[in-house]
Image (cartoon, rainbow, N blue to C red; front, side, top):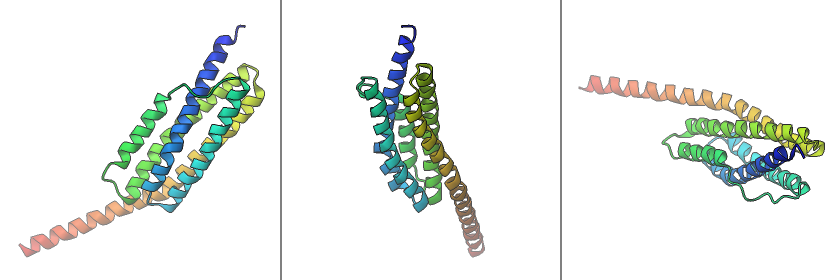
Amino acid sequence: MADSGLKELYIEELKDIYNAENQLVRALPKMAKASSSEDLKNGFLEHLEQTKGHVQRLEKVLKALGENPKGKKCKGMEGLIEEGSEAMQEDFEGAVMDAALIGAAQRVEHYEIAAYGTVIAFANALGEAEQAETLEETLNEEKETDEKLTEIAGTINEEAVAGAEAEEQEEASHRKKSRSAA
């Protein structure tokens, strides 16, 4: 069978995404907890529920292929989550922390969008139209999540800039008072 190599690659990629989604299931609650914005916190929790559905869809696709979803470690997602964890350990507060979380989350979404695009192309090439359709549902949800994050980022970034400007004004006022007292 000429496509056996592609089918093997398809299965490996599905297992990789399965592991990635499971890593995300563990990371999203931590990201929600680190958020100061209610919109962002709720967005992370909503995406957590969606991600659990993504895991179930992948299990369904892999089962249809007669495959066990386990056995692969997604190092790409591991690295992205590690970067997000590092951002959460920084001294950022409020809107600046939220901006860092959004940046980390969007890198994750873009990674997932690329991964799902790849497996959908493989499924179509292998004549697995039903599987491609199932995976397309997830791809669309990942794109929607990315759009929501972009929307929330607009507000958060404005808040971060306003907070920085207020801090600068306060510091300038403090310096001026210190000079006049001297």
